[in-house]
Length: 233
Image 1 (cartoon, one colour):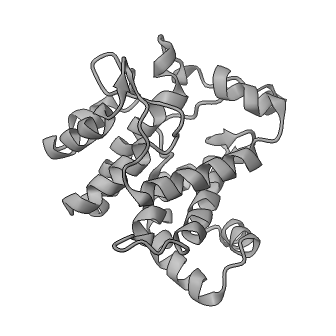
Image 2 (cartoon, one colour):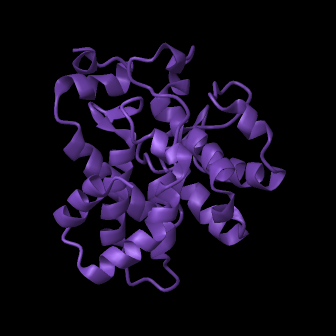
Image 3 (cartoon, one colour):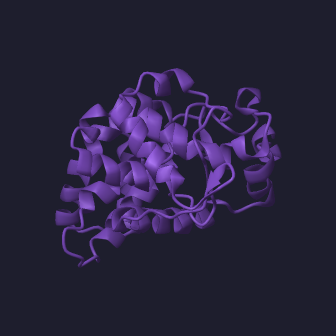
């Protein structure tokens, strides 16, 4: 475990010992997954030169802090944090990567990656999706974490980078994904936000963290183009 990065954000968000213990109980087993560890490397640069793994760490930590303030009955802090850990587990790096290119506008990374993240998450963390009620909350939160930006509807024209994993999913998961993406669907995208508080809290944390991490023009422009001159240099 890269304790220095995690500790940096625990300090930044002023975690006390009890909060740290509770957060790490949720976070550590998922963090140690080999696929997550790949995203801690410079192969996956997410916002400028910040690795995807570091982005997810800060998202998860801020999500926990925001979630602890929610007083709503039946709200699950652990599910909100789980959504944060899984929300960006897309398949291929998107900055300066020819393999990430697609033919159609709404198949670009920004619209497509929540769908890939859901598919990868179910495949790599099956234990998190065994209970249907929990699976619905997590899947819906991941799919709509970019709100108010839309997410790509999953049909035959989507250009998935992990289509073989989708094909291998149980039909029950495919139905949950489809039902979630049908909400407020216009054309090939869904404009819905998560219907669960856990997903909405995580989306709020992601918006805050992303604004803080995207600090230069090249990184902001890359969100549209996929090309980041800063990384080349």
